[in-house]
Amino acid sequence: MIQTSTPIWNKRWTFIMATTGAAVGLGNIWKFPYIAGENGGGAFVLVYLLCILLLGIPIMIAEVMLGRRARENPIHAMIVNARDAGASKFWALLGVLGVVCGIMILMYYSVVAGWALEYFSQSVQSDYIGKQPQEISAGFGVLANDNERQLLWHSVFLLITGLIVGLGVTRGIGTAVDNLMPLLFILLLILLGYSIRNGSFDEAFGFMFNADFSKLTGESVLIAMGHAFFTLSLGMGTVMVYGAYMPQESSIPSAVVMVAFLDTLIALIAGMIIFPLVFASGLQPGSGPGLLFETLPIAFGGMWNGAIFGSAFFFLVAIAALSSSIS
Image (cartoon, rainbow, N blue to C red; front, side, top):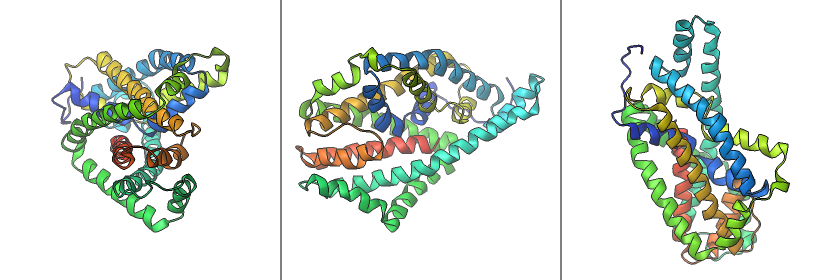
């Protein structure tokens, strides 16, 4: 191991929470459940798990190893490891590309997170409760055309992100994930209980988990592979950075397997929160911003204690976005 002055997290659990926070994001909530249901349900989930096991976990282990060995940022880590291996210094370009990729992702994450904060505010004030579906759905279009309101929430989210990152990886990000991730798990369980009680749980379970191999195509396999890479934050430098702060005595394979397990579990739970409510409201399942900011407000707007649980849900979305953005 190369000796540096890089501080190290005292707990293996902090590494797991930070890396899980980087992995868990909007894709777990608005993308994975839908693509699973549309591409064969349980058959797609099986292929996805194989992609995680055979591709995602080995690559993630390699990234953590590179980071922990060098105890440096992604660019310098690639320089150090390439130099020690007698390889070309141009391997550093991979670190540069990872950093650029992370910045580009933050550009849209911060906008969507701002929308989540706006809808959290609306839920707290019961703005969409009791309104007609058309009016609720149109509300998102109004927000998308309101530049001042978008800029306000976008700025609030970036300010929170900047304050956490400004404190550093150990004092800022480490402390944040130690608190945010348990809160995220608690909110998931509360919302899952609400969805089981008030939603069409059996219909949603069938949509996501009944195996239909006739829908499984070559394109489905590529979708599963792509999502496995994206959801584990592979190739973006984040995993390498967190590897640099991982305690030397901690087992890399066991920690990475735990991260992959938690990330997948959260995605599956998110689907079983969202789609029972969607089906119970007689709405069509979907993905992306339309699912979060049009379909779900309609569902919460007509349900028991919709304002309370709608607030909890959009706070959950904001936490998921924040845990990824600070990474």
